[in-house]
Image (tube, rainbow, N blue to C red; front, side, top):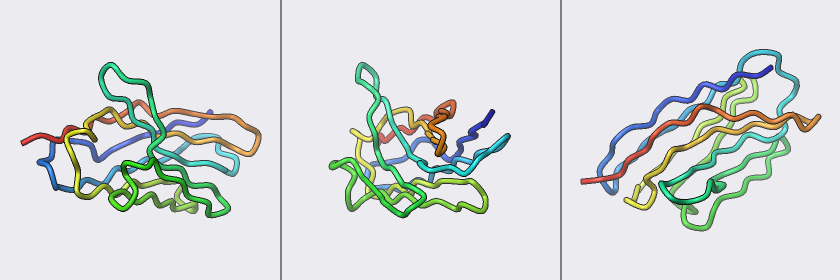
Length: 116
C-alpha cells in the first residue's frame, strides 16, 4: 500500500505563485508515473501535469508556460510549481502515482484558491 501526502495549497492572489508537494510512502515499488490532477466545483477531474520515470512530461494546455512538474525519485516526491496563477486555476489538486505493475494511488487533495 502507498500513501500520498500533499502539501502547499492555499489562498493566493491572481498572478501569485504556489508550490505543491506530494510525498509517497509505504510499500513502494518503482513508480512509473507521478502526476497532478485538479477538480473545480461542478467540473470533472482533469490532468494538469504528468511526469514519467523516463522523463516524459505532459501539461494541460492552459497551464503550459506557467506550471512546472518535477520529481525527486530518491525521495518518491513530486512537485508542482505554479506561477502566474489565475482565478480559473482554483480547484482541489490531487496527486496521482502509478507503478509499473499498474497499481495507482490518489492523494487526499489540497485546495488551491486564486482570488483577490
